[in-house]
Amino acid sequence: MLLRYPRFGTRLLQIAMAVLITSAAISLPAAAESEEETLAKREYWQDKYRVLLRNQAILKDNVTKLEHDYAQAQRRNYPRGGARNELLLKATSQRQQLAQTEKEIASIFTEARTSDVPPGWLYEIEDEPIDTRRPASPDTAGEDDRAGRNPRFLDQDKDDGY
Image (cartoon, rainbow, N blue to C red; front, side, top):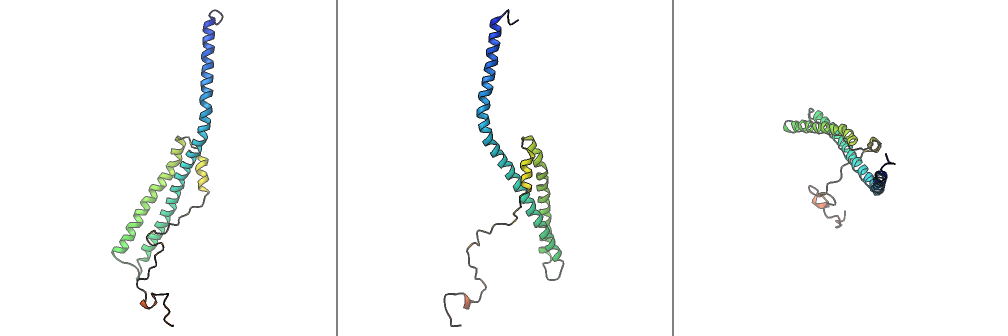
């Protein structure tokens, strides 16, 4: 058929060459952008998973402390009444937040898979230590609290002869 209609064969060859050249031209810049996009995507998903794991650790710690405080409130020298009930309410609230965070952790792998994220990116985060310390309150940083102290010792620069 190509021999009978040489113009058809030439036209088909031109179209095939145009498609090849276009696909090659598109893939070269896309490859350069994809490396940067891949790094940004990796950082985004790892940060998201890191935050979820940190929140889970903090909430577990909070629940443990609040349950301990509530158990201690049953004793004689610890808070009673409303304060004890407040501890129980806070522990329940923290447990609910922990359950929600654990659901999000379970669903992040599904979300990542639908976004074409390799699971190895998320597994790398599980090997990192989790820092559950909280930053110092900005209100008290650098303040010298002397309320309730003996006024005799408030002025440290003054030598009273003692």
